[in-house]
Length: 175
Length: 269
Image (cartoon, rainbow over all chains, first blue to last red; front, side):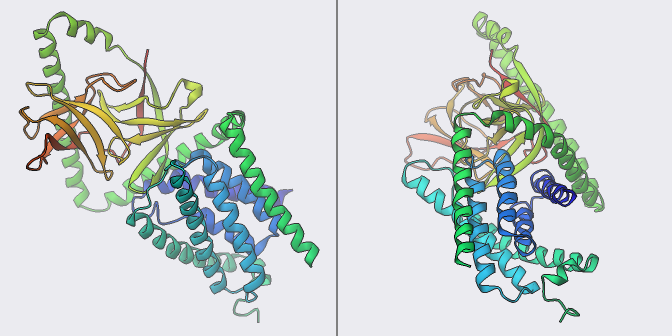
């Protein structure tokens, strides 16, 4: 129970940082998505159902505060988490820092590709809600890079503070 | 193993079905109580984090000596804004006196209802910024309502309102459209559209009208819910090309649109 409350608190904190705090910084606002980093981290630590439930909860809250049509973030988040979990189970046998960085990058890319795909479909049926400009592509590329770097930093801090990840990840001294 | 895989597939489909159901319920407005509850919990925390972010930004900014100059520059800009607003009001009042009764009646009608709102977040999609405000349909806010700062500086319109959250689209956003009026002799009217989140373009201005740089642009009152006389900006550049039937100009907004905190939403009577 305390464990779940702690996870809920982490998700809430991540959401208020993403929605309230990061919005103030022009340079980083569109280039960092700490919710994707956290949920990808969850893929490494928790079971599939738990990851999807946290994805549903955080996606719903993000949708309330998002300027995109309601549900778009939830559905993109869930699809990208399902795909990332599939990749993680089938291809990332080596649970290293590099695996985490690649998985964060692929989750970020999938998330934006799903948004773009749904935006394209909406455009085809005459309901355009998003302009996919060159600045959008640039910010996605930046976001992939920044998310991967921040995941690496988060991983290093977490392994420094606790031994828990050493059971899940391949880190020096654990081999 | 196969069984386990199947159960994961089932749970994935179930999760997507839940999202689709939530979208449907949201479309029916059935999620309103849940949205209100989330807003009730999140808005005060978001507000704190947003203010914290502003303080962080200002703290790091103040480390630089150049910011002293920037501050002074901002102060002077604010004074210019203040004078421009006064000038705009005087021009309007002057016109009202010249055009006698109908205008005076109109000024009486300018007693507007408004609702103050706090910015609780900022969302960027493409080239446009969407500010999240802590007032929603529970406070009488509806899409299309104009949002102002200071003494009648129009900054944008509400594009969506949840029960306790509303979304403000800036006038400089690409998808923002409204009708404006130049404060010249002819009171030229035209169509204003946002330009990559920085400025506005005003088009469809009659060819014979006299337009000059620094002239003020106000709302014309032709848009639903937006009263006449809200200050939008000043003409920064004439952009008419040879052979065009109408004139067009570039307009710089008077109010800085990147440091919003408290705004007022005008509620039509």
